[in-house]
Image (cartoon, rainbow, N blue to C red; front, top):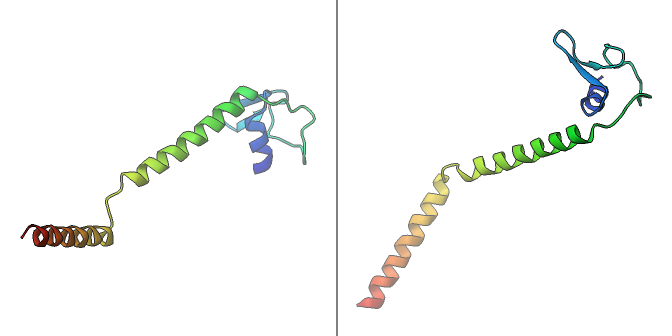
Length: 94
């Protein structure tokens, strides 16, 4: 039934029932088709809205990862590089 509901989510004939969730707007029933619904009509605007929503979720996840604190290993390596650079700078000035 999950594949059926996924198809219904972007069907122009879909309807929402507070007691059943997504149902067919023509029959007021949960989907009963096996592979393809003979009454399926693609709702292009809804399909675009869902695609945009997925992209926003992907972008938000990427931004969350960017905002995470540095790992201990990254901090240690950064400190070592800084110390080595300072030592080289100090020895080249003297």
